[in-house]
Length: 267
Image 1 (cartoon, rainbow, N blue to C red):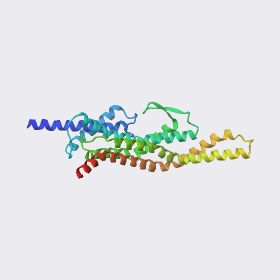
Image 2 (cartoon, rainbow, N blue to C red):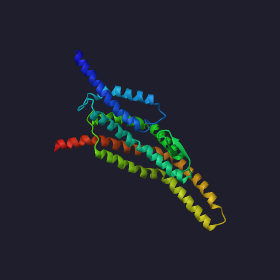
Image 3 (tube, rainbow, N blue to C red):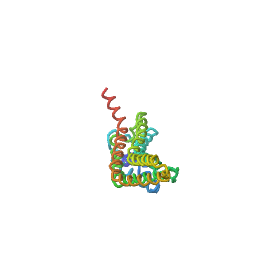
Image 4 (cartoon, one colour):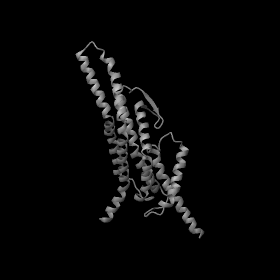
């Protein structure tokens, strides 16, 4: 009987360690969870608590391999990184949109030190990232991400995942899509400021004596801020749609090895 308890305790520790590695990879990069505003100790306690609670459940799932090795630990880390790196593209999209609008507002030289990356970022880029985080928290997307991570243990059981080159290529392609998404988010302000520039240019041609150069920047900034304030109501729907798309991509990348195995068995 003690020997059986020893084996059961060993399986529990293996399952908890593997789950800890997977959740840690997600927390290191995913939106909100990776924020430096959250203390490192709080993150460590959170990850440990989640792994402790999940260990008895995920250890009993079919095809779970409760062995500690380099390949199993690397596979669990890959699952967490797929979730974290894919969802962090949402923050990059908000940062790039802020850079575009900041250039139109003539704020391109106003930079702040980003505490997350320790690099200089534009003022509006930092503002957009904070507003995106508020939308994530307000819409409960952080809880949806955590629930999806828990469900990933059924799609990719413990110790069975192997990162394929196609998954890395898909993440790179998704990273290329953040540029288009950022332009879509900044499109209303871009269109308005361009119309202001054209209007001021035509006014300068009609009345050369007017100081149009001194009017361009204030008019662009005021018009852009007014339109940006009016478009904030559409942000939650836009951000939620992009978050859902990235989360679906992460789930599909996690399921790719399973589908390949199934196809191989069918052949």
